[in-house]
Amino acid sequence: MLKIHEMTTASGQLAPVFLRADAGTLALVGEEDIPLPDGALEAVMGRYGKPLGEGVSLVPVAAIDLGEGRALRHVRHLALYDVIARDYLVYERPDGEALCALATTVAGALDHLGRAARAR
Image (tube, rainbow, N blue to C red; front, top):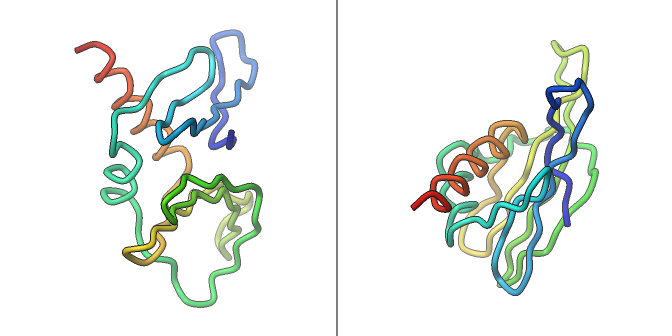
């Protein structure tokens, strides 16, 4: 499992959000398990992710192997204009360059897609 985000609960506590990969299927794990539809991560990273810039200094936090040459890395970046480092997710794929997106954006989009698929 890979911690991809933290959310604040109604009680004010921080609750971690994890991405779990089991036998080719992905799920968000937090207050509840939310299975993700096939291709959800690829769609979200394709929509919100951008190629990494040259010389960007990223601090590795953790990574998860997604199989078939794919991986997701949790990294931190402190831009010159930021006071606090931001969490990003980097999606590595064999058929294209790595894509990077804000972790909070990816977690929110995956949560939405998982809940929408479950409601069908």
